[in-house]
Length: 346
Image (tube, rainbow, N blue to C red; front, top):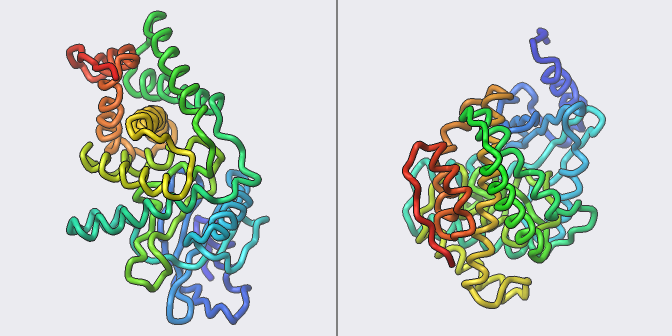
């Protein structure tokens, strides 16, 4: 084969050609499937009458071990995750079953009637409840210290690098107080398996029945044992899909009812639960603002900038509702060149 400027792609093709003939792979059909915010890449190729997916995870930057471990935990819980057809952890290659060509995000972008949308998301909520009953064996804790450390991405990358704003001592103190409150409160929630990106780009639409039960779940290798509201916050305040507050609330109520029926440790009063998942969404979305700014400025991935206004809106939605977040809201007003906003305390 002619050489390319991509030695890993050459190595991947060589690995595929050496796999058992029983897999009926057609390496010449190898084509890009997707990439993500890390160094991982995904390819699709034909196999027999269907297709399979290949993960390329460069060992210098990625480890396939967590993916394999979490895949086992989720599969044991009865969830639809890719089957491992072949693996070479030394080279960083995995051959996976294909869960279909379309994510929830792609289906939404193509246009869905409301009945189909609601069915897809109720199935996702049911899968979330099942996932939260999975074993957390071998998963690191997503505790208050880790949550607090992650929030530093917001002042470092979003405030200082993206907006070019240097915080004065009073603003730094106020922001630190908000961060401490969020991290302590969220870190004290009951602990379950947390996917960490349980949202539309990582849910495969398997509703035609060919690829197993809906949804298929991918990109779970960063799972931790942490706050029970985290993945719900990921789903209803999706960084890539705008959901109005009424829709967020509808899905949150449906999840809460299913979680209680499954004896998951959610608050008995929905008002308490509502506050818990909103505070979790605020923490997550502050981190995401920092992550997206870093992806643009450090990693030359400007596409993430398009999602910043949506995430900022989600942050403001919660920050404006609770008076304790007034220091954060004042900073957001400064960054967005707005007049000061009045917050409401609940």
